[in-house]
Image 1: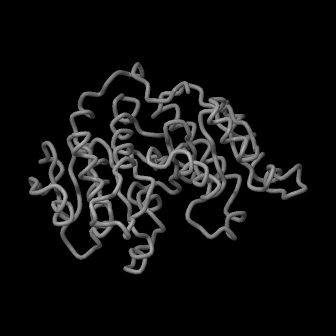
Image 2: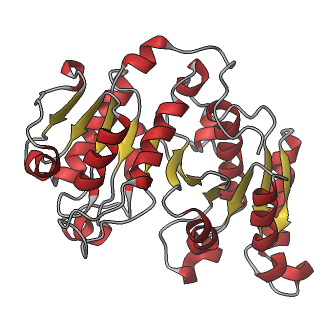
Image 3: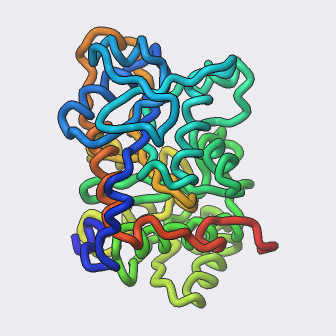
Length: 336
């Protein structure tokens, strides 16, 4: 599909960005994150700082150089957080600070266990909201990029019964704007074609199966078109993802978690990368969880982590890839 990678003639390479290391947070030290992080880094060999529990990482790597700040990093090294905060959380704070300060090239994250962290006082339902808070972004977007499919979510980790009430014109429009900005500024697609899914079967069937499409989603699509964004929808999810697979659109905006993740993980599991939209930094992540059932056995598949690292490197190859994103694309509240 056209525009499958970042533009190489889009402002040229920013040498300083490419020399800076990645920061990689492996996530839960008891899960497969440390294993897949080390395996992927050995395979791809980028300059990277692993921010996490040293013992969990060196189980798979052997001894690695230690640093006390990302500025000291050369090659592959470990920065171990100090203090009483869960290591997964402290690691993210350090990594985000390094990206915002310009000492790190991009952030790559491993899987965390949401329930376990929440039980320890963590107030977010995953990486996305916490990263938004650290970056001062009100409504960051969750998106997924694969070899063929690319999609963003209007709602994320909430009970299905709450989805309809969380789908507002403001939120749908914000995700369309974030998606358009990401395609244009990060992937180098000058005029992205975006398909927007309906919430209900057959996109509501003209109101027969629900009115969210008529009252909420279509007005958001119209507002996006008024900003000269090519938007198709609301249409049924099966049509939207088929169009994406056939190259008729570049991106799909879905309404809820499983509407997007079920088809994407069926087709692209292992090559799918979680990306956060609207941040003033590049963040990619694996498409899987902590996998406690196989943790420590040396059998975990590192392909998703390899894909996340590779995409982070691609997205920071050009000067456009590290430029700040506008407030409207971030989804920062502007009274909309």
